[in-house]
Image (cartoon, rainbow, N blue to C red; front, side, top):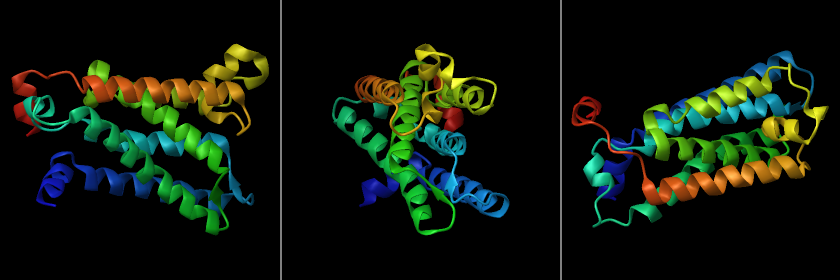
Length: 204
């Protein structure tokens, strides 16, 4: 248990969990206040998930890069578990909304978007580090949710706007699956790149 407490503190997970929960609650409250529809639209589901994932992006790296790469610890398993628990922490508050008058639904869209966006963030963490891992998912989502792109323009566009496609979209499910699997494998095996010593000291 002591190791778990130290891990949570070093990764700043409590702050990330609080931020993600507050963000989801705020979107839910705004929808409840200003919309008469019971189901929160897929654009808002995608945006909410992305903001929650952004809050957890910093937790993908610890304060000590050498410790995060030591051979004495089974880091690939822990990194994969970290992503799984992160996905659970993001999905759980959204599921709680299903018992209210404004709900994030359907469940398939919530799970699909969480898997794909978190996978893209994990891939970014493996390539450029946790500090910038949120950038690509956030930009992609913002471009997607702005109602300027036409999802019906063709198969290629369905891939671009996969996160706002309806639950039955095969292209969206495939895109999310590829991002999720690629991101989990890359992050679990490689972890985040080692940072310069000065940056590690500053984070600590």
